[in-house]
Image (cartoon, rainbow, N blue to C red):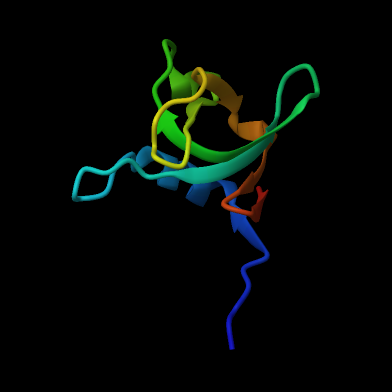
Length: 95
């Protein structure tokens, strides 16, 4: 019997995004779905958390970088508004 988590609170997602690597030094890879400013829905099946050249807390943004199966960067850093998060690791994000 497995328990399926239906949703996760946004503050817990943000705490998880702050943890960038495991104690062994490996990057933590996750999947994320969000909506861009222009309304485009974006899904990154493999991504890692990164910094941005701005005050992330003040601007309510986080940086994500798409990676391939081996953890190598395969795109550019994308700023994501925390208010536009839809899914994190396949789980719906709620307030």
